[in-house]
Structures are given as C-alpha cells and as structure tokens.
Image (cartoon, rainbow, N blue to C red; front, side):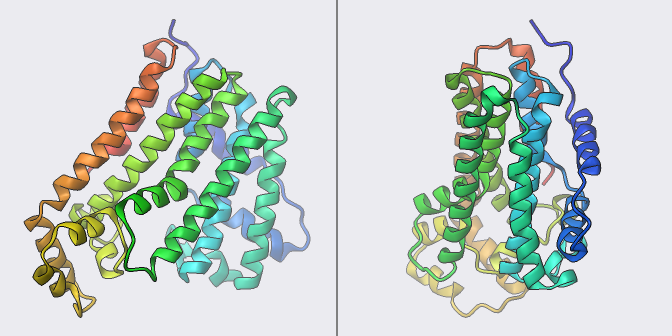
Length: 324
C-alpha cells in the first residue's frame, strides 16, 4: 500500500534547511566556527540528505527519526568540500569565496576537522537500537570518500590509469556517499539488512551513472544549463572515462595530436573532434546506462509497494536525464 505521508524532494529540502538553520555551534573561538556556518548556509541541492530521507520513507520511516543521519551526511559532505577546495586551490564555491580564501588555509583545515566531529555528533542522535549499524555505515562511507579523493589526486601524476581504476575511484569519491546516505536512511527506518544493502546498491550505481553523465555533459552539455564551463575536464587534462576510452581506442597518430595542445578553445575542439571520430560519447553513454540499469534492478528487488518507489525513480530520472 502506498504511503500517504511520502514527501516530495522539495518538501524534504525544507526540513533539511530548517535543521541546518537550527543547528547551533559554539560561539568561541568565532574564527573556528563561523566558517562552518558559512559553508553550511551556502546552499546547494542537498541531494544526499534528501535521498537519505527518501530512503527512510521508502521503508516507512519518519523524517524526524532520519534527520540526524541526514544532517551527519550533509555536514560530512561540506567538510570534504572545505578540504577539497584547499587541495584544488579553488577560489570560489557556489559563487562565493571558499573558506580557505576567506579565513586562511590553517583555519579552513581546523574548521573542516571540527565539522567531522559535528557530523559524528549528529549521527549519535539516531535511535539507540540502530546506532551501531548507523555508525558502522557512516564510518565506512566517510573512509571510502577519503580513499576516492586520494586516488583522484594520485591519478593526476599517472599516465597508466585504467578504466577499471577510474570507475573504482568515482565509486569511492562520489557514489559511496550516495549509497551510504541511502543505506543510513534504511537503517534508521529499521529495514532489514538485505533491503538496506539493496538501497545501498541503488545509490552507489546511481552515483556512478551520475558521474559518468557529468563527464559527458562536461564535453557536450549546454554551459547555461549544465552550470559549468564546457570542456573544463579537457582543459585540465582530467582523466575521465571519456579521455581514458579515447586513449584505449585511438591510433598512435591521433593520440600524438594531444601532446602539446594549448589550454584554449582549440584544445577543446580538437579533443572533442577525436571523441566524435571514435564514438566516445556513445561508449560513455552505454556504460552510464549500464550502471543506471543496475541501480533500477536493485530498487526493483526491494519488497515494498512499487508506488512507494515512484519518488525515487522520478528523482533518479531527473538527475540522469537533466538538460544537456
């Protein structure tokens, strides 16, 4: 039977924003805690906590019971953004100064560290009978994300990265957090282990598919709709699935064209032309769809009414088939 109390993503976002607004941090030292409020209030889609709450409702859980876990995931995610921005020396985050640019690198590191503590404080607010399982899942998720970030950095200096290694890296860096969030939602709703694992598989596969779609849109998307500079991955020589597939399929002469290309529009045009020659977009789309199919296959196995799955199915399709 369909839950009458299912909330839309927009309704769940209101609950999350309210919880963020109501979270109070110590007042002193101000320079340690102000950056936390700053980045938490910068906005964003809040997709991970929304999907956590949706997963909880899938198993008849309540928003109130799942909110601490949602706040833990969102706080952890923003902690990683502070440290990622330091590593990337990024000046802007969501159109505003990054924490390390505004307060300095040392303060940004410490504020990020405290955010990890705050995330743990949130997760300990879940019901006592699911606390051990929630902590285990949260810790495994956080560790996986850090492993993924380390691999991503190592890949920058390697010329022998395989497609399998890349897929594992994006699984850890991006998809594990989606899967872990959804599994947490299931755990706080007292879902059985098998079904919690299935919703994890849904989230992880969807996260991989999302990143592959992001790789495609970076080259072929409309910059006004995509929200990023088209060709940014090409200009930065980022080892995406598309670039690695090109290296696998292209002739030596065509690959030699890539050496010494200037970091300008000409480089984007030339690499894109090679992608077109070797049907790289089609290759990437095929594997993206494979992971999306894996996600929906896991969701299908969950033994709840199909009408309860509709909100997750709709959100997944909106994410994957967003305008390019």
